Image (tube, rainbow, N blue to C red; front, side, top):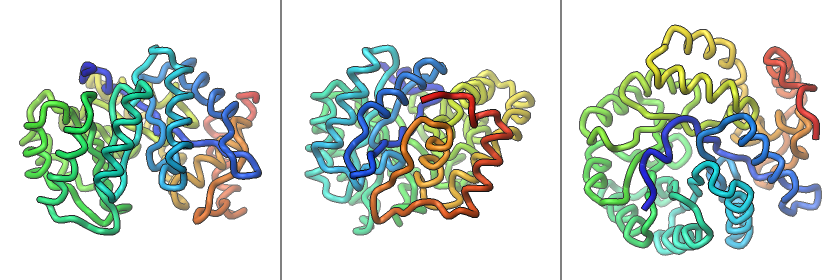
Length: 301
């Protein structure tokens, strides 16, 4: 099992690039990986919700992780997504990601069927016991309709390879409780770019980021300033990034961030149904934010 230190710092929740015909754009994916490495990212998270995992076939999911693992060659850890609302399928996906060389698994709470806390506990226990690598829980009730409560997380902490949680509930009181009750060794990771500073101030150890797709170096710098307790400097940087943080969610994630990356010349502007392209009005706002950060026209294909 990898070190839990593998998933500290800033990790990018990577988008999955597609071609006009809907196929995976493997060359664009590799360009994204190279850019992330050049910009100093701490770890990578392929095939999460930002990677449109729900719209990928099992073989596409595996292919994306396989390509990322091969390209990275151990330079940074890979926390591969494996989530869903069918426990047996999630466990099977997690095992496959482990076989492909992922260093850990990020698994979201089951959506739509809305299990109670006992169901959540048993779901994650089953997934954790199906693999030998670390498992990081992912709580995002705004997207799943299910909230993983601190008392359930505390129960899951007792499982050896359940090493942390990506917290995107937006509920700072709940996250405060989580930080108080879980062991110090348990990794509390921000799942919201804009809430990273308060979460790290509460004891968080990093961020799984959307904005680091577009601005990896700045996001790494921001995260590290928070981790070093240099919060005044971090606030200055957050103010620079905040508009883009907000605009990344002006429509369903990852529509805006993929649009931004297309504007930057990194990928083509394609999402899979049921997602649809960003409206023109929103594109104007997004382009202005990218220009403010000097991101448009600074990166070639």
